Image 1 (spheres, rainbow, N blue to C red):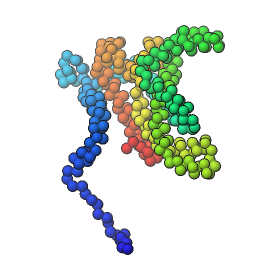
Image 2 (image 1 turned 90 degrees about the vertical axis):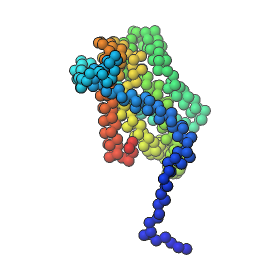
Image 3 (image 1 turned 135 degrees about the vertical axis):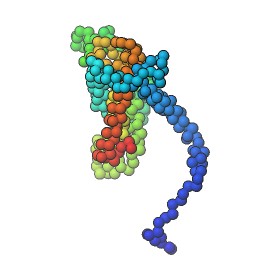
Amino acid sequence: MKVASPNVVPSVSREKPGWFPKVLYANRYLFLMFLPGLAYFIIFHYIPMFGIFIAFKNYSPFLGVFKSPWVGLDKFRSFFESPYAWRVIRNTLLLNTYALVFRFPAPIMLALLLNEVRSDAYKRTIQTVTYFPYFVSTVIIAGLVMQLLSSTGVVNTVLKRLFDTSTIKFLEQPRLFRPIYISTTIWQGMGFGAIIYLAAIAGIDPNLYEAATIDGAGRWKRMWYVTIPGILPTTIILFLLNLGQLLNVGIELVLLLYNPLTYETADVIDTFVYRRGLAGVGGPVDMSLGAAVGLFKSLIGLLLIVTANKVARTVGETSLW
């Protein structure tokens, strides 16, 4: 039997010209499934980037984008000189920081708990109950929250009967808006977010659990030393993606729950852009100001995600790119 010499370099087969159409045809069904997602990002994410120009212009719908006069960075200065600038930036950062601290770990803990459930029927029931709020309209979710926390709602009724307290106007107190918002988003998205972590847990090699059991590890130690390290790469990727959205808040829920009494803690960048750029509250409609604030928010998000990705690559092996 002939043994290949270690100095012999194996030949590398090169594709002939025209290989891409062959690959495209061979995987035509996969590419067809990919087209709707590609079209979505092109239509709703890339084409609208053309509107960035109006952030540097005094935009008028009657003049159009090209004929509107250039104003440079005046719209950015107008925002940062506004008395509301610091308030909306502070509220946005605080809401998203609380979301990273409390909302981000919630799906992980739910997935870990569901993984330990041995009854399939009970597990499916819990999954269905926790997934359901995600598929309910945000308007309905906000309506439920408002009904529960109203003066005659369930929460006030229970508090009165158990502790004989006076009526609490939850949605009119600025200090209570953040806990209400974070709790609502946890309830709405926790079950659906756990799907990704359950899929990551399902991909862990069962032999690792068997080896840990043979070594005497109980369920807690198997979860701590096998399950959590197994889903850590997925957790890091999702954390980086969430960090890039640090200045993005669920504007629909905020708009439905906040009111002028809670602007102090509830007014965020997105609601400010809506009021000034589209609704014209507090002044004339200023689409250029809204575009400038939105561009500022996007640039900060890009800087955050690039920095976090670089730190993740330096500390560990998992990163977005």
